[in-house]
Length: 295
Length: 284
Image (tube, rainbow over all chains, first blue to last red; front, side, top):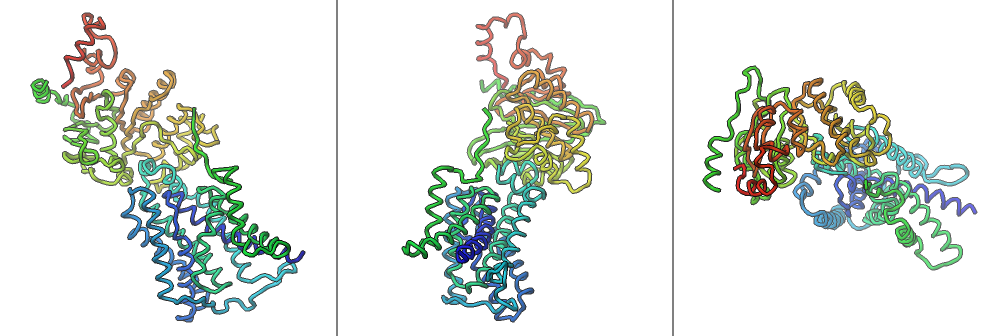
């Protein structure tokens, strides 16, 4: 029973991370209708940057981490200006192909720069695990949960109340209308990539601290698909809920598998089965917007 | 056909003298607009909008009215169109070729055809977006002002996509007011509205012109309403201005009466005559 509870907590924590990555995925999709296949690589680049600052420069985590975030912000903007801005006005499918290309390039570049083996982060917290309600939980997971909740609340506020958030939603709804309101669509795109890259890096660093940094991290980008589609491609709340569901499902499937079935690897595929089931019932996902049509 | 065209173009666009005190806020000088590098839509269009007035731009479908507005607001760029000749000056500054978002910052706001409100946002969010370019503290007061013009928008707390057509039009106008522009380009505010609602929308257009001192360039199919609200008018055909004058002059012009207002000369009353007449005589 404790195992089940432990797995549930793990699921929620990992699910919150999925949720965060899913949100940054949705952010790009909402602003520009681009499905970003290089999302997982953002995690990877963020994690490697932070690792490099911490090991090569011997910076303490509390300095290296913010520098990573600033770097990722700049990285997102530059990526948008150099690679994606020339693609504005091209068919969306071409842009999506470009993101697949980017994903391959980044993967290879990271392997070239940092090698193919997983490298552990230097210890960040005084004690790697802490006792939470009688459960052993990694300290970094607790931190990641707090950060995730903070980011989620931030996103919620940003899209509902901030001027830029509203402008981004307007851009997502109709670029021509957005421009007629005085919104610079190019700025909005750049900003969405920047924020997305930065938020993904937070997740990347967290996972890197737990499991070590390796190209396996970019697998997160694929795990995020069921989360995002489950919640509805264009819904921030959906992304969070989808992330949590996928996280919990994975761990429950693991429990089921290890206790009774012994099929192995249920962990990996269970979310995708559930994804198919949900899409059959709700094709827009749980929270996706249907088009409003006045008749 | 060709000979009449040249004859007309030499004497048609005579701008009647406007009182010297009136400053021209916007002048469009002999512009040519091409879509996709091949489709010529505007062929030497000129018009002027004096500060503080309502100017109507009338014409048949496909005459290029909406294109004219988009050329001014810069939105032409988003549709692969381009001003290839002539220039557009706003308060003495040449503005053609500038990005639409920068033109909004200069004080020109277009209310696009078909309302184009953001359906998955609330009224309030739509209005706040209207004030996107503003940095001053007057936004809250202006929200109250817009709600005083359109009290029913305040009651609607749901998504704007579920508003009625008239309410959406009011929201679109309110959104333009939130930007506090100097010039509003209005593209067919009466489209798809009931006659009663059309009256209401036009009275509001006149009211904000008077109260806020905002200049309005109005594109309309409903020529009768437009010429009642406007002080001056232009009539377009085939990408050119073919007739212009004060609203009074246009209302009394026989051709305008016939083509846009209905009725006209007694001897043209017969439908048979009218048809042959229309075929024979074009504006150009």
